[in-house]
Amino acid sequence: MAVKRNGTQGKRSQRISVSLQSVQEPLSEPPLSLERIVATAVELLDAQGVDGLTMRRLADRLGSGVMSLYWHVDNKEEVFDLALDSVLEYRGPPQMVESQDWRGEVVHMLDDWRASMLRHPWSASLLPRRALGPNILGRLELLSKTLSRAGVADTDLNVAIWSLWNYVMGATITRGSFDLSDDDRAAAQQRLTSERYPTIERSRLLLDSDWDGAFRKGLDFLLDGLAPG
Amino acid sequence: MAVKRNGTQGKRSQRISVSLQSVQEPLSEPPLSLERIVATAVELLDAQGVDGLTMRRLADRLGSGVMSLYWHVDNKEEVFDLALDSVLEYRGPPQMVESQDWRGEVVHMLDDWRASMLRHPWSASLLPRRALGPNILGRLELLSKTLSRAGVADTDLNVAIWSLWNYVMGATITRGSFDLSDDDRAAAQQRLTSERYPTIERSRLLLDSDWDGAFRKGLDFLLDGLAPG
DNA sequence: GATTGACTCGTACATCGTACGATGCGACTA
DNA sequence: TAGTCGCATCGTACGATGTACGAGTCAATC
Image (cartoon, rainbow over all chains, first blue to last red):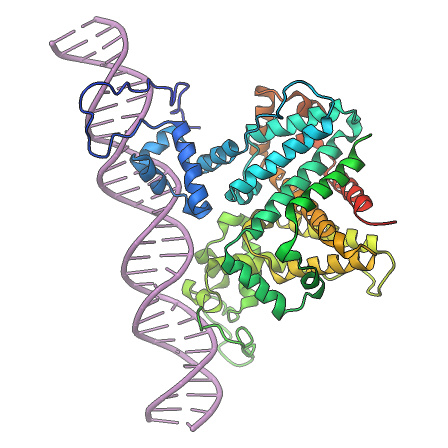
């Protein structure tokens, strides 16, 4: 839509700040760039949550005017998209040779995915309403390739991918929902004892489930069913 | 916090509109009530999405002043909570006797859950950031009870519940994310062909997956692993 | 008639995203 | 040197939003 943002955006010479006037009012921030904007947005989201990110606050942290952001970014939605995607990058399993251990690779990637999102709780609430960024697509591609290499038939590939994806997404979002403040936790407990949910209460489901263990076990069952040997 | 809302809220006599002055300016809306507010909020969310729900629009639809809403409701967040929960009610499987078919019951409830959320796409994006309402807890309770009755050991119960819950949550949210406008769809396709995701592209993963079939198959695998015979 | 409590609503304010246009600046050309 | 142009920054202003505050209405009670 907008014709503004060009190919060299953010790449401008790093301003060799050698010469004079080293002393300046607000300490002379480095110039704006997409990278800096996104990184700062992630900081802010980590610190203040989804509602804590406003363009004004973001600009303040960057030491720039609010409207300067809009040269690098079309709108706030794009900031969300970029922040989300930037947090979901995947660098691959430890060793880079094509191992035979496809199952280990899949588990590693999905584990890392879940861990990344839990490190940034806002990501879980953002994901459902944003489009799929390149890093998400990259993970899907990797998953797809690995399963294919493991011998999953093309006919079953989509089922396998979606099942695994769904499972991880759900696990992440569920866990995130429970990482609310202690107030909310107390409120939930309150509701439990007022209205009656005896089975839940007995199993202490909401209180001290072994989340990580449960995640791995369910994942194992899925993989058992979805892929051969 | 607020001491306002009392026990009889919304229950006020239905205003027996028999007598005179049947003609009035804007057709004389029925009085406000929590029920009417929530129902209208759901209408609005269905029609306009999460961002389409504003207190002013809500009041307009109800034919009331904006601030009148705040007598029935503490804040906008509560409207979201109530709308979300109201959409997730579950009335149980067709026959009400305690059948032996625990697996059928579980599948029925989870299917219905997914269907409910897909009927109201905004619910998927709301759920991750809201606390658990009574209807959600009720479903968890039912799931828990049924699995317990099916012979799942207490030790494995939490794993089983979370695995199933996670799976359904993820499936719902994923599907919701893909129910975007055609524009977004086109954009995704664009990204696919520009950057390279060959395996995804070949399997047409994003385009014509059999979502419902995939959902059921993955669910079956999970149930196979999680529960006996 | 006075009081009370349930309920409604107009006004006002702080905060938000962002449209618009002015401004500065380095690198070109004439 | 003067003029032009594209990149980049930012101040001002506007409409929309959530909601605090307090005044208003009306039925039931004393």
